[in-house]
Image (cartoon, rainbow, N blue to C red; front, side, top):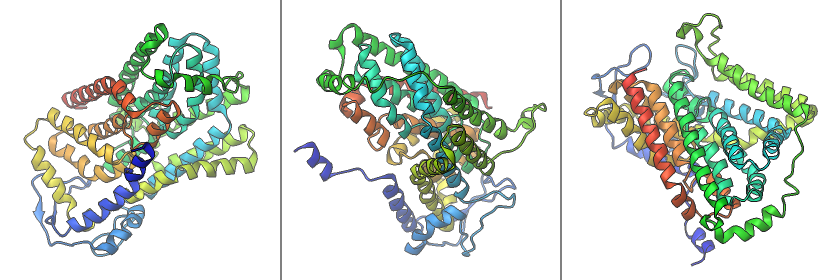
Length: 494
């Protein structure tokens, strides 16, 4: 059977299909799972040992069809009333998250359109010349920065031809190039600190500040990137010393012909002053966002005013900076608007998947089974120590991340159940968020359900079998790192 025939025989369904199917499955389960409720404290947290049965409210196919829309605007209560705001004025629905995703997509689209990011990486490649180890280290740090700050994923695909050509010219192989990009951005996403699609969505649903527990995510980011750099350099040096050690020798001639033949097209000139200014504004955008979201007063710092930014303020800020960067970049009014719309369009799928995923929570809430599932999970983990509990959460998220490769979709589906479990187990809620995002990022280094992995390997002509065998040890090391950091977080209790 040919590869094409295998593809036609079976293709793994998209995250949209999986989530929509789950919505209808959960609607059916509202007729099977007993209805129940916890009593809740004024902060909206379930009170332990208060679970009690209630009258069932089964959901039907019409409810399942409307669930994503209700999830976008607000959770529909059993009496049919749609409450968009809670008593504190915060949005229940995912419309705030979805709008932020679209607007930051526009911001990224404008920045990419100016060519500043491409020129910056191209300038780094050219300026380092033959210093291969330094090149690998610096590029992986740059891609990790993109991953941790805004979940760099599909954007990285544009850099594969340039970096593969550069690595081949330095005597390395295509796997070395693919690995430094994929692992750099992937480990950065695994240790997301500001990533609005992973950390932002999860913390919003968990009801905690974006920067809470950031120290543990920084540890995963820094140590994980260091391990990744060591792993890639170790292999790349071995290949350069003895090309027969390459695990992709079967595609060497094809890659040499394509990428070395196109090397003249990949040569870049130095960055212009305008491009340097754009990159400065790009970085400044995230710095200001950090200042805006950190509750400085709560951590005893009075020199900086606490502004309590959330999705509304962050959305407005990135929309403004998208316009500023477009005008500074010389795109003009029409060019800036078109680039912003194109960037937002690229994120439309991510925004919609948040709504579809939130629909599952709507069905569970309206069907009065979400507290029952929470109660069952509490019972299943009640005998575990805090350390065992947080590691069990991490392990549970590994198969879930395979089924739902969208980090925002996974957070929207699972956080309503997982976050309250932390309180029952005596574990800080932010560690559940860290367990989720590190597991999701780890799985997205290898899963064929993630388009970035599929696309990156295809560009480098690397089969999944070769990639899985080569990266297996690194994945185990990174998993161990995450579990150690989560365990330390529980023991420290902060």
